[in-house]
Image (cartoon, rainbow, N blue to C red; front, side, top):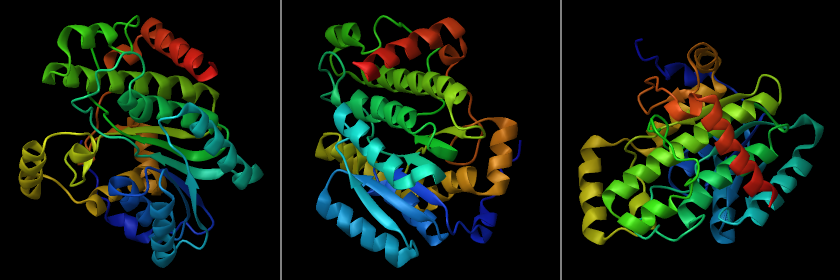
Length: 301
């Protein structure tokens, strides 16, 4: 299939619609929030820092969002995720919100070797699932995870979702980091498939892989300065800007052409609007259900 063009985004107007963007204080999240604001949407950012949150609100207003807000939350904390979900539901009322775009987190860091639900998993995966689950009857058009789509596992140990055994044997090796990414993709895909069964009718679930985008993700994840600089230099040639990438989730979530494409081809896409396949293990009923049961247990605990 020839990749579609996002050129029609320029004609999309979203006046009166609401986009909730988590991780909106910087990087991809800020660019996505501003893109929705420029289309006339009201944008509600979710950020951890109050000073950054205030700055984001001012930028959103300048970009065209009449109702720009920031909800403060530390998305590594379950109680904070649930609290901010309640605040969003109260603000949305019966109308709901049209879009939820989650961009929080980043790549697995060199120190993500703690047992149990480490900080990376808590933010990159669990907070996405928890927030999407809490807002499944509030969001009406698109629930989007900008994460690690297309990297899922062919095999999956449902008894080691936190990868404790792997961490104990391999520590923070690169092989472990690749395995973490495959685990993340599989869990999100499994959750998105299950969430679709119990959500607002017509709500589309998207899992988007951003590819190489010029952000501070590696630095924020604790990698060494030489690796960060090497990645940044190569990224000048090989990556896109956050503003360029923001057109992709905007197209698939808010553009009529993109939504029709999702309805026809599914909700897994890369940064070039190439179609991706969901994680193979998430397509297996028994594996997906085991993952979902584990997530439900953690969400209820």
